[in-house]
Length: 607
Ligand code: GCU
Image 1 (tube, protein in one colour):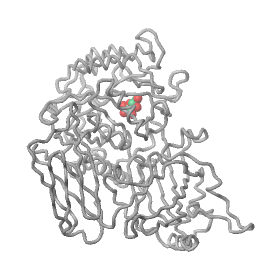
Image 2: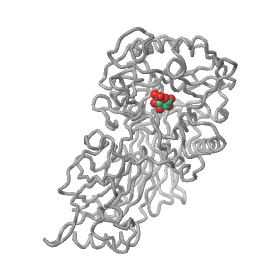
Image 3: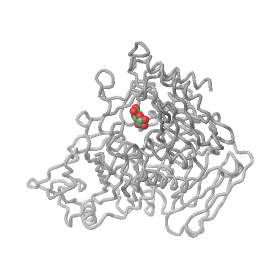
Image 4: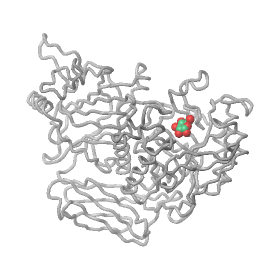
C-alpha cells in the first residue's frame, strides 16, 4: 500500500499541486484534533537544495522531480542508490517553537529549514474530511503530504490549513514543511523591524477531522445597535448544504434556536433576549454556545458586549472606559523565544493584570490564539495589529494583497472574541500618497469584514512652532480611524525626560486618543542618578514626566506604553547594557520588575 501511495504521490506531485481547499476553519481551537506537536526531524537548507535542482529549477515543477527533492522523503532502495539526505537520520527540533532559540547554530539564521513528521491516522468515518491546521509559521511555508504539494503560505503570524482528505492514509504519512524566514523588501513586515526574526513552525500543528458536511464558519455577536439582540450567521461546507437545519443553543440564556440554511449553506441568526449578562472588564462573562447540525457540532465560549466611540470617548456597553494598557511582543518570558503556549500567555497577561491593566496592545503582528482566549476569560481588552510596520513596499500590489490577507485572517480567527476591540492597520508608517492609499484600502476591508469593532493605527505625530514644542497629529489617516493613536518618545529619542514639561499637545480631531507607545530603556539592576541613561532611575523619571505630560491631553482615553518585558532585537547591540535586547521593558527578560513598573502601576490605580 505504501509504495502504491508514494508512486501515486510522485505522479500527482509531478503534474500539479492539489487544489488544497484552504479556507480557514473557524474555532479550530475547540475542535477535537490529533496534535502533531512534539519532535520533528529537520534539515537546515541555506541553498534550498531540497527545493531546487542544480539548475535552480523547482523540483516540484519538473515532470520527474528526481529523488533529491526533500519533499519526497526519498529512501535508498539498495546499496548502490544515491540519496544525499535522510530525514529519519537527521536531528529533531520541537514544534511549536522558533528554531533560533532551540539551536545555537540557528540563533541568527535566516533561510530555509525543512521539517518532517511521520504519523498514522485512522479516520473515524470514511466519508469524513481531514485537514492539517497550522497556528502560524514564520515566514514563507511550503507544505507537502506524502510527497504531494498542499500549498504555499506567506505571512508569519496567522493560521492556515489544507484539506488532506484525499491524500491521508491510515499509516506511514509523512508531512514535510519547508519554512523560509528570509526577510524581503516586499514582505509584511519588510526588511527592517525592531524585533528578532524568529523562524520556523512557531505555533501548533494539528490534524482536524470533520464530517463531510460541517460547520465552516460562524459569527455570533451582540447586535451593536440593539443590546437585546444576538445576531450573526452560520455557514456550512460540503455537499447538500441547502435547507440544512442548524440548532443554536446558549443554555444559560435559555436559548434553543433552530435556523435553516439557504442555497449557499448559510443561515442567519437573530436571537432576542432581555437578560444578557454583558461581557466587561469587571465581569468577563462568557456564554457556552453550541452550534449543532446533524453531522457536526462545535462549542464556543462567547462574550456579548458592544464597543463604540462617541466623540472623544470609548464606550464599552455604553460606559466610558479608559484603556490602562501595555504593549506586548510575542516573546516568551523566562524561556525566551517566540511565545506559543497557554503558560506563556498566562504569564504575560498575569503581569499585565499585576500592572493594573485592562488593555493590551499585541504588537506588532497577530499573537497566538491562547492570548486572545485568555484575554476573553480575564477581562482584558485587546488591540490586534498586522505587521504593516515602518517602510513597507507601498507601491507593490502583492505586498498589499499579503497585508490584506493577514488582516482578513486575524479578523476571521478572532471575530467571536469579546476582548478584541481594535484592529490596527499599521505602526509608525511614513506618510505618502501610496501609504495613505494602502492604509485606506485596509481600513475599508476591515470595516467590510467587521463593522462591530474599532480601527486604529500608530500614526505619525508632527511638531509645530519654532521650537517644535507644540505637537499635533496631521497624519491624513487620522481622519479614517475610529481611534487616533500615536507613539511618542519624549525623554528617550526626543530630548531628556524634563523636555516633557515644555511640550503641549494640540489634537484637533474630536476622536478618542490612545498613546500607543512611550517609554525608555533600563538595564534591570543598574542604578544611579535619574539623569544617567540606562539606569532604572532614568526610566522611572521618564515615566513620571510622561504621565504628567499626557494627562493634559483632553481626548486621552488610553495608553499602552512600550513595553511589558525586554525583548530580543538585532538592532540593540550595546555591550553590557543591551547585548541584543531592547531594554524598554518594565520587566527584564528573566522576570524582574524595574522601578518604572511601579510608577505605571500607581498611575493606573489612580485612574
Ligand atoms: C518604535 C516601534 C517599536 C520599537 C520602539 C523602540 O516606536 O514602534 O517597534 O521597538 O520604537 O525604538 O524601542
